[in-house]
Length: 112
Image 1 (cartoon, rainbow, N blue to C red):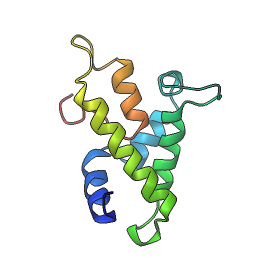
Image 2 (tube, helix red, strand yellow):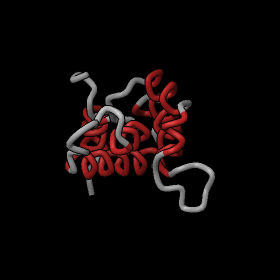
Image 3 (cartoon, rainbow, N blue to C red):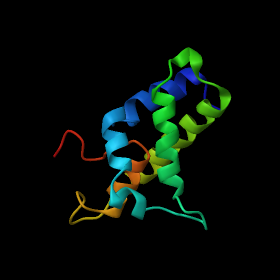
Image 4 (cartoon, helix red, strand yellow):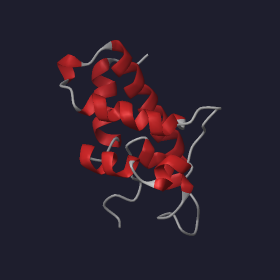
């Protein structure tokens, strides 16, 4: 199990969208369209994005165990999905990228 300091460090590195970028993204049709809905109206990733915004609104000292657990889940998701490398052709407009963005990570940020 990772320490809070390890989770914090990875989180700050991998969650590369600002609160404004993520909030604006979550309002788009593509954001709501991608991801596993598992019978719910909202995908797991979209719901995660809303939790990420709540976490980003707190200081490190204000985080509770639910926040730390979610942060670890986000880090794991981003690592697994970025390792896949995405589609060979149009990464910019891919569900792979859109799903990652729901989790607070734009894999093309800095390269677009």
